[in-house]
Length: 298
Image (tube, rainbow, N blue to C red; front, side):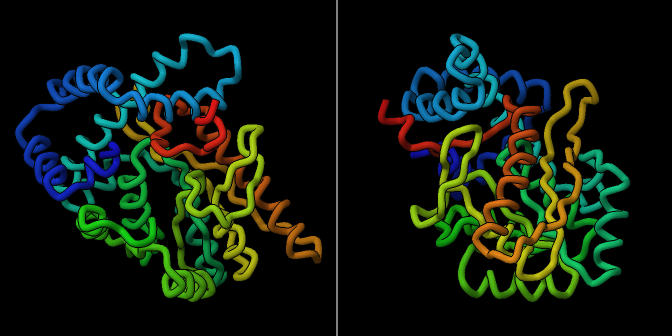
C-alpha cells in the first residue's frame, strides 16, 4: 500500500485522530523521525520515487544529499499529518490561526472578488495543503478544491473531513469543472494541485528542465474566465515555529491570440512559480508518485 493510501485509509484516519489527541507534539515529532528512518529501510519503492523526484530538482551532482533529504521529507510528511489531525478537532478560527497568512493576500482576493474576477489557487504538494485550503476558506467564501477523480472510500472520508473548514471538496469530473467555471465567473476561488501528473493524455511541459505531464487545467480555466492565478503553499517554518503561507505574486494571464500559445506561455509562468516554491521547501515536497516516469526506468 502506498503511503498516501495508508494515511487516508479509514483505519489510518481513525488511528491518526486517536494518536493526535493523546500524544504530545514533542513525542509525536520524535516518533515521526524514527518512523521515517524505518520507512526508508522497508519501503524501497517509495524511496526510489522520492530520490528520482528530488534528484531531478537538485541535479546530477546531489550525491548523498538525496538520501538525507528523502528521510527528512518522510519525517516532515508524518509530522504534517499529525498536525493536520490535531487541527481538525479545533474550531475554524483556531485552525486558521495555525498558519501565518500575509495580509496582502486577502486584500488581493477581496479586490478580485469586488471586481467580479475569480482566482485560481495552484498548490504544489508542499507542506500542509489541507491546512492551507482551510486557512484560505476561513477568509474567502466558497473555495472549491478540486481533488483526484474517483476517490477510494478512504479518500472519500478524508474529503469529508477536509470540507469541515468550509471548503467545497469536489473530485475532478466534468461536472466539477463546470462548477469551477461558474464559480470563477462569479468571482470565486478554485484550488488545484499543480505538480502531480494525473493523466497520460495531458500535454507534457518542461518542469525542472524535464518534460512532465503536469495538469494545465488551472491555466485553461483562468484563460476562459479571466481569473488570476496564484501559486502558494503552507510550509512549516522552523525559525518561526509555525506554518506560513508562501504566496507567489498573482499572475494575469497573457494572451497572444493563439490558444495553444496562450496555454504554453502561461503554463511556463505558472510552472516557474511552482518551481520557486518547491525549491524553497524541497524537504517538504510530498510527491509520492513519479513526476518523471522515465527516471524510474534508469
